[in-house]
Amino acid sequence: MLRRLGARRESVFPLTRREAQEIEVHNSMDEPFGLDHLEDLDVEAVEELGFLRRSVDAVVRAGAIEGWTFAVQASTSYVSAHHYLPALSSGSRVLAAGCDVNATQRVEYAVDGHVLSSFDPGTPGYDDGADPSALA
Image 1 (cartoon, rainbow, N blue to C red):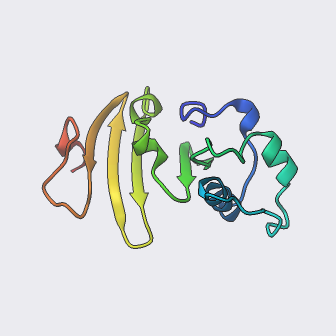
Image 2 (image 1 turned 120 degrees about the vertical axis):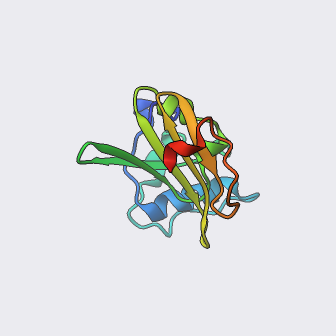
Image 3 (image 1 turned 60 degrees about the vertical axis):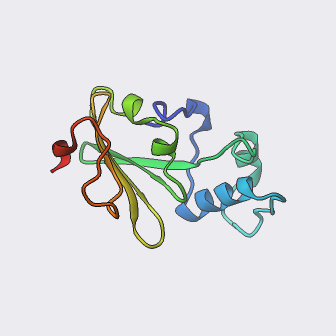
């Protein structure tokens, strides 16, 4: 999954949710702050792997359980914003949900490279996927 999202094998590094979120915030700031307050984070290793570049706009954490693979990103929906659903769902199914602190902002369902359903739950009746009934 991470390779389909554009990650290089050598850039895979274990991070907690807080560390991933702090790195994303660090990279988006006009004047990035230090990460020394994250006591368990190996800042040198993260920097060497390229995580602390302004061009890094997403830090995605991933895992697997009982045959399902999942990815979590702290702040934005990288999968939707960069149109990764077709590649990510090639040969499989993907359900992506983009949320903020208040609500789910976007739900998307793709199967074998085709985005079948894509909608904002706050806008009932509008789905710009190829088969809006696929998620019903």
